Amino acid sequence: MTADKIGLLTMNVFLLPGETKVLHLKDFRSQYLINDVAKSGMPFGIFCLRKFYQHMMGTLVELDRVIKRYPNGEIDIRIKAKKSFSLDKFYSKMDGKEYPGAKIVVETSHDNYAVDNTILTAYHAHQFRLTPDNFDNGTVNFYDIAKSLDLSTDDKINLSKLKAKQQQQAHLLRLIKYKNSLIDQEIKSKFTFYLN
Image 1 (cartoon, rainbow, N blue to C red):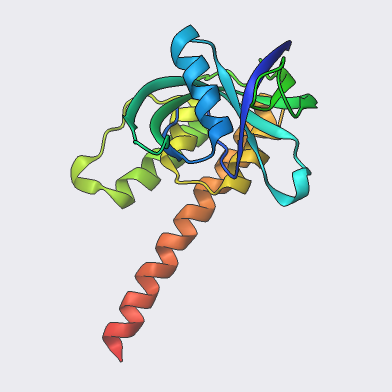
Image 2 (image 1 turned 60 degrees about the horizontal axis):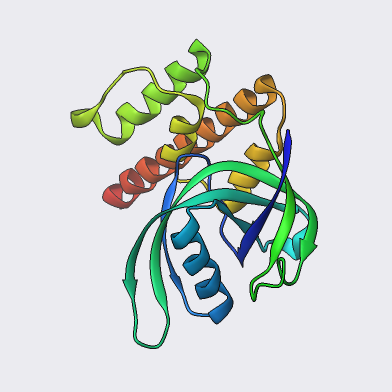
């Protein structure tokens, strides 16, 4: 783990490494941060405002591009997630800037890695059920699978909190099984509807 000091956006967003997201930023503090990031190329973070800060987690991101700047100062950006972090210390103003910042601890245990065959088999079966015509049974990594499952913010946070690969993979397998159960329920409800 490494400790860094970074500028922050605070919002109800948590991304897994490799995910991208488009954000529309309205407040002036966020605009100042993005202007500094665009000039320097420095990474920044998104602190996830969730459940009264009980998780104290966020995502280290990089600015992929500025999509649009509006006359009123608002801005559209595209970001890409790098790693998750835990918050060590929060600053309402970072080094005299108008935006918040934090000292963070970057989670180095969350690198993308190959999953075991049990998860790969379950994932391929899940993908085949969703898109049988475009099915690709190639090798995928841990975060590739997690990103494809359309997880909720809470699911992403819970997955990222796990430190051991064995715990991460067991949780990912539970999520795949849960998504499959949703597909089963949808099929069953369609069948029941057609019978009535």
